[in-house]
Amino acid sequence: MSATHTKKILLGCIADDFTGATDLANNLVRAGMRVVQTIGVPAEPLDTEADAVVVALKSRTIPAPEAVAQSLDALRWLQAQGAQQIYFKYCSTFDSTPAGNIGPVTDALMAALGTPFTIATPAFPDNKRTVFKGYLFAGDVLLSESGMQNHPLTPMTDPNLVRVLQAQTQQRVGLIDHTVVAQGADAVRARIAALRAEGVAIAIVDAVSNDDLLRMGPALAELPLLTAGSGVAIALPANFGLAPSSQAASLPAAGGRQAIVSGSCSTATNGQVLAFIQSGRPALAIDPLRIAAGVDVAAEALAWAEPLLDGGPVLVYSTAEPRDVRAIQGQLGVEEAGALVERTLAQIARGLAARGVRQLVVAGGETSGACVQALGIAQMRIGGQIDPGVPWCHAAVDAALKAPEGLHITLKSGNFGTPDFFTKAFAALAA
Ligand code: ADP
Image (tube, rainbow, N blue to C red; front, top):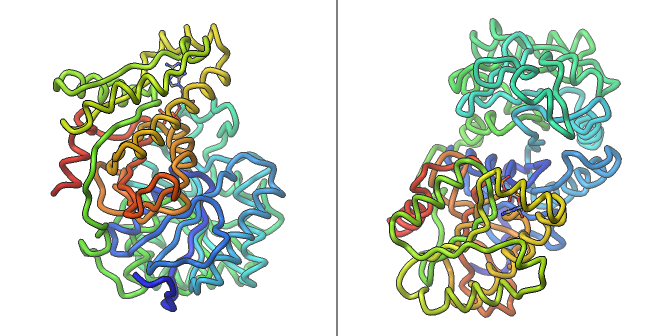
């Protein structure tokens, strides 16, 4: 690929967190777009071809003015790459508070784009998030009964999204309900026109199935800005004349050594670590208390891994059962324990790359952030899906790692993936 690309991107996306960005990118790839995800707003123009770019911010729970400033930065960069439509992506549980950040960021993007109307829908039926009459359901229950009412940062106590969003914006919020969506794109267009005539600027849109999202898709083509969870993404590539294809997910050929670094303590990850150990593959547990005691646990882990790497994938993990995690947190403090483990696993990921690992699985959302940073990854091309929400990616890494070919990496957030994910991932890459 040459360093200069004149081809413009079609869709520019701004995601309010890292794993949410990957989730969106994954849906766009599956629907036929070639997608690059950037970590923050790039300083340079995009140097590769893509139909869509997802800029991953960490703006979900920061003060609203900062979220607005970062989102506008991302908008300017995406516009400079030629984006014809902008997609502001937030969580499918609409994580926000009366202070924001969904309302303020939406307002700012609308003003910057000079557009008087946009939609807002977190519906993601594949992930059991549905919206009906403006009420958000998670699985079979209302959002406010789903556990999200107890979220430490963004407690969602009201499932009515018209009210939730209205509390965050001066603009009028309305509803495009399911009776309209069920009639198809023309009915949605007519409803948008009617809402605009009434002075509504942002409409929550019902969707209880992928069919609903696909039906409304054509009506969204005319809107300069969309705001949504990742579900709406399945309907967009068709608006640009793109259909699902294996080419959209194509990555450079994979080679090199294989490893897994796991700092997630979620139920699914505990099962995946156990399944990997039971498959007879080499696995090393690292002990947060030894890190805290000043032992160079990263050096130990790398010395352990080095002679094993030619024999197939190795696993280094801090993954533990909730009781053990609580005990560690009791001794070190929650934040200190998390930071120590993240730093150590990130050092290990870097050391593994320096030792020829070119296929890396990372388990854990925060752990992924730390590893991506340690590897000097600024952007990733999104490939095929291993399990729902978890694609392989390819990325250039820090030049000091002497891996000009880059590496294949997959970032698995806590509860994603089947029990055999760690072995299945490498098989999927070889296929
Ligand atoms: P998930 O996606 O499952 O939530 P994360 O990586 O986001 O995983 O979060 C896991 C957090 O727990 C990280 O901060 C990690 O450093 C920390 N952690 C990992 N292992 C342990 C452990 N054994 N004891 C205490 N904290 C741990």
